[in-house]
Length: 215
Image 1 (cartoon, rainbow, N blue to C red):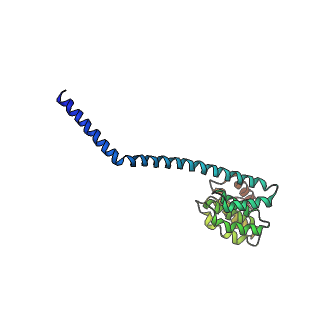
Image 2: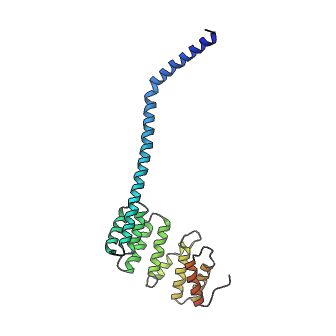
Image 3: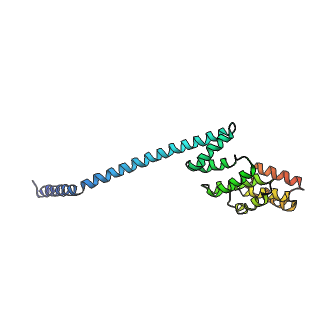
């Protein structure tokens, strides 16, 4: 056997002895760590599947309650109120928003929408609740109060800004301030994001009240 071969065997033996010593000290911890990783990954995957199944069930329950409105609105409202207290998000917020609109009178609906708005899970839903409340109140004594609360929602980055401007124009027209109403309708008409339905309503109102400004 050459000297190099002998040294190689000695080196291998030393490494094997070191590995055995290392494993005797730390092998249990390596196995335990591997088990922890496997359990953690399995738990995460299991939770994700459970979460997905729970959300699917919440979605189905919410859809069923909405479908029941046409045949039994009282039962639908009771179910939506229950979901509005206990369901997973976003269905908890959606159910609360729907339930508020099923109360017997417009006044009750407006009050409920204004109350539930700050409790909803997303700012867009909060804005929507306030806009719906203002629409429902537009022919009531609370119209000016409710529309007045919407001004912060009319910023350029808010999703219902055009609805807010349309409500402000409706209120101005009802108060006889045609000039202000036309200013608001023209502002809506010039917005590049105006939906077709809103654009058609605004055009009709401008034609009724003397035409639009030049763009």
